[in-house]
Every structure is written in C-alpha cells, then in structure tokens.
Image (cartoon, one colour):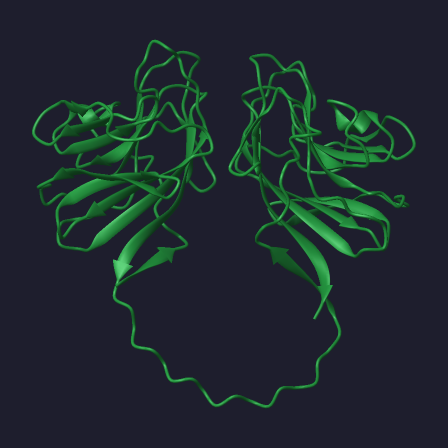
Length: 384
C-alpha cells in the first residue's frame, strides 16, 4: 500500500459547524470568534466508515494563544457527531489537546483523559490525525513525529474530523486528507522519442528550499517557526516590526518571485496599512518603506508605496486589498529594473521602475500577534 495525497482533500462543513468562527480559503481555514475563550466546534465534510482503509488528516496550526485559565486551548480529533461545541463531550469522540499534549477518549461517555499522551503543539505545528478503519484505531502526530495509537476498538462510525477553537486568536488550516490506496502495477517504460533540439527560453523554476526569514536582521520581537518560513507579530496593539528574507538579489540576475501566504490578519481601524509586503535594500527600520530603495504593498486598502529615493510615494489605487488566506507574490525583474505584486495569481501591475543594483531582499512588516505570514517559496528565472 501507499499513501496518495488528494489535492482537493477535506474541507470544513459549515452546515454542521458552529456559526461563530470565520471560514476562509475554500473552507480549509477556520478562525475562532471573540476575545475570551469559549469553545466553538468545527467539523470536516468527509465522513469515513469502518473497513475503508487508513485515513490521515493534516492540520496546521496558524495561530495559538495560551489563556492560562484553560488547560486545553485548542483541540483536534475525530468524532461521530456534531452535537457539541466541544466535541469530546459526546460518545465516540477522540481528541488531542494543544496546551499540555493530553488526549481524551470518550468512546462511550465523556471523558477519559490521558495526561502526558503526546507533545504540546503551537502555532506553526502540523498535527496529523490517523484513523485506521480496518484496525479500528486512532492516533496523532506532530510535525511528522508519531505520538502513538491513542484509542482502540472504535465503532463503525462514520467518523469525521473535529476541531474545537477557543477564540479569534486560534486558527487552523486543513491541508490535505490522505487515504491508503493500493499501489498500481508498474507501467512498462515507453520507447523513448528522439530528443528535439533545445529551445532557449526563459521560465520560472520553483526552489523547494526557497527563502527564509533572516532572524539576525529582523526585529527581535517577532516569533519565527517552520524553519524560519513563518513569522508572527507580537503584542496586543498595532506596532510595526520588520522581518527580512535571507536571500539577496542583485541587478542583472534575472526574474525573482517570492510567494507569501497570509495566515492571519486583523483590521485595527486606526491603521490604514495593517500588514505590508515588499522588497528593500536595507533592514534599518521596523517599517521598511521608510528607507530608500524600498517598495511595498499594503494589505488593508491595496495601496502601494515607492520609496526609490526617499519615503514615501503612495499609490492609493494600486491593487486589491489582501487578507488571511490570500497568497501575495512579489516579482523583481532585476534585468528590467522593475518590481510588481500579485494576489492569488492575479497580477496587480508594476509599482517601481528604474530600480538600482541592490542587493534586494524580501521585506514584511507585521503589526501585532494577530498578523502572521508564511513564505511559501521563491522562484528564479532560468533558461531551459
């Protein structure tokens, strides 16, 4: 057998989930509601019955806060019902708690806790839920490390993914659902066709290793995770902190594109930028566009800023606003000396021309703990 990832995967089912949370990114991202911890239950759309193989859900924690008064904070698991805001209160429910790593087995009734089951998990961690419907077991994992089988003798189901979030400072994303499928017999290799003469063109080739945030030149207030590809702001009130990419690009080196996923976002009202993404030649400021040779794109109203010589030339009608779940691209054409931005694959146009020799690096300014981004990848123009 082999695991085959379904790119369309599972999604959250709004029809049976609490109406308080916010859903985005095609109902694969959920964010809690309110300022104080109060459970809301959300449930996957896919239902799985006994005897159907092994099923694995992957859930990435985008945002998390320890409230102190609650020893669970965030719960991820499996259930046969959607009757409660905290799913493990019902029979045939199994959960894994973020704060202290305990698990709960409510096979017949609530609640049999196992303190010390697994590792606690936080923002940036990936939690897996593995339901073996043939062996009738469920277990969990964190960042690829198996925490072990937690419960045995599960009933016939059907089971679905279950998540309980505490408030708006907790959010998760459902990445993919994996099903065990037979490995097909190998296909005989076809007779190779003659190789045509190469054509010289320019294309983008994504590097899996990509760029990362350089913690040595970024604000020390920020929280970095996922190999320094995720950055989360700090504090309860909007106060700029600058984070900067490691990769530096000089003029005449081709086309370079960064992909930045907005994980969490909040509109504070008093600030018309909220979150800024761009490029810069310096790391001297918490808001990078205040320095020369800096170019930014603002989340709240879609304005851009060109600080080629000095701060700040704004274009208030530049592009679309962007929010949590959106993917922002930053494209530096170091041959043409231009920079432009895109949102979810839609080009917003050129912001700056006549850029200098650099070197330039990615720049992201976040406002507080309610804003976070992930650097998905970087592509470079290469000849094929």
